[in-house]
Length: 144
Image (cartoon, rainbow, N blue to C red; front, side, top):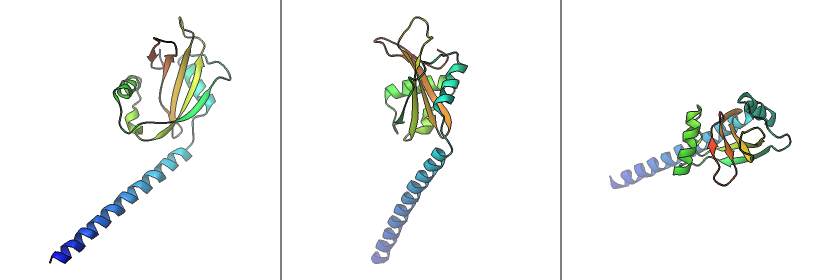
């Protein structure tokens, strides 16, 4: 009886390992599908900003891959509060790598060093901000 219990526990353990491996594989496949679904281009991101009235300095756009943390710190929670106010929510993308575009904004009144950040994933814009890079600057949503 004790031997069959040990065998059953081994079977359960192997089954759990198998389920975990399947979940990891499926998550990788889903991530690949979303990445293959397309990306937002620099031009599309710039046009998105123009819809909010922002002018960008030509030739200054930068792009980089950033990781959305799986656990949000207090700072990230505050950043996500900005996202939620403008209709986005980064909690859906916890643990994902996203593409971030950074643009220099040329028409923000009373500030000079202003940038726009646009976060994209799976061919769509998922969030971002407008901020001053000056000491004591600001950070706000796309509407400014």
